[in-house]
Length: 409
Image: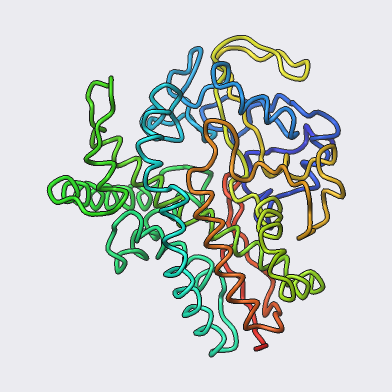
């Protein structure tokens, strides 16, 4: 089908995973393409769709031209396809210099030293989860392992009560799986979930301000920003930080772990090689992130008239770049559609790039390291019990269910 016949905003296109065949044609026929407005495009407008690695990097490396906040006649754009009122408040929807100040403040809680101190505890927890799954012989790997360890880890880092983690994720899951609606469409159910989450977050933040502890949320709630007025983050900014860190920490790593396991099941020779040689784990993790691309796209807004790959972009235009497509770009990755745990080099952008490179990348790598290290040391055989079930989203590439049968080593 010609590219014009596809609606990239129609979530039906993504119900069986990311449609790589469509984006292969996108890269070939029109690397930078004006997507016209449809019944599914938010705000009643079209957008520029960027499918290739090189052009995605050009957008990501030029925040002056491609803003995470807004531009032209669009003061609040943000990083999702619909214009978002959180643009300028949420860390991932800020531009420098404020973005850099807030990011520097937040990054104190995610240094390699801090993350490294978690390894022993996360390995112990991963071991418990995997032993429980092995004892049963089969499980839904998404819910019982791939989602559970990241939920526990982000609860530890943020200082949220662990017993609340599933309730919190149930509220936030409306951002990741649009089961019966268009992307980010509001319903009574989503409004109720966000209201409950905001009430919970406000109470939690008030507690961190009154009695800070040794966790990231306390650190951010107490910190002051030099040369900013107000010097401390507002409650709205703190709430958006809490939403972002909990949501990203709970969901994207889940999708990378689950997507990685699915490919190891589909490629038993690579699974056996990884089980036999732990030194392959770092490159395998990078390939799992490239392959799964948990954040399928990000969006910017043009601040001025410009040109990209010969296409004239106007101030205020939405510009969407698809990491999931860029990570399969044949001009950058040899045998791009082959899953290869030994792939070197691997310049994927699954963790973003530039000023918005993922703050939690090292935590995600650690969680993947302990899960696959513990699993492959114990498990000789892996099989699917049923076909994988994908989330319904073009923003996050995720698995809803992955039923797996295990055989002990």
